[in-house]
Image 1 (cartoon, one colour):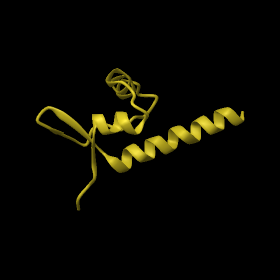
Image 2: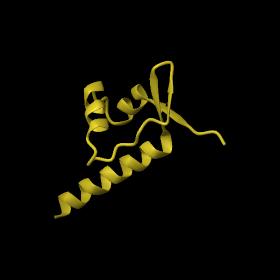
Image 3: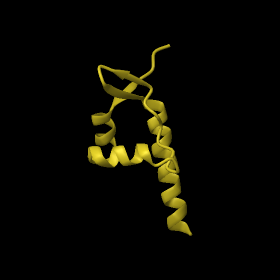
Image 4: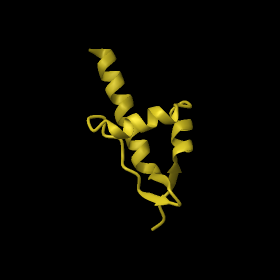
Length: 69
């Protein structure tokens, strides 16, 4: 079974051109629940695209709920 992988650059672009530091901070914040990299190839991390999409959906729902409160 083949998984779609996303590089850090692809993730940063998908979230509106966030900085590398922001992505690093998300990874360090356990309460945020950012997915761990799926694989490391030549010292570059890659994430499962489905996990990143699920994270984005969770964050969007949380923002809507916070705004509604």
